[in-house]
Image (cartoon, rainbow, N blue to C red; front, side, top):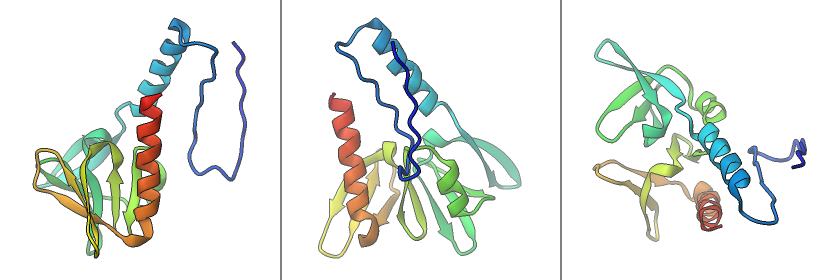
Length: 154
């Protein structure tokens, strides 16, 4: 097996590609290990009712600003986060993306996308919560979702 590292300042996200002549145990193990590293539970501190909660980012549906506060939304709760949205955007993994000036979305939590003439609404499974994608970010969101779909097909 050969290992190569290529640094390109033009690339916005780190992408690891495994190129092999055939799918075998070694390739599958490497892929599984990398996938696990990418999705390992990253935590953020959330505050609610004078308590601190340690939230796995994989369980967060989206982050949004409400006035001067940043709120993390899970399926059934909302927590105040003591970080700026732009700080979270840089700290969070590739499963998150900004979809409006005030919202960062967890791409793995999307259940449905409803596009109308005036807006695009994102729904999540087993919750009433929904967010809207601004027109400025819609094309990028569609590209990321298509990339994810194609990477899972291969």
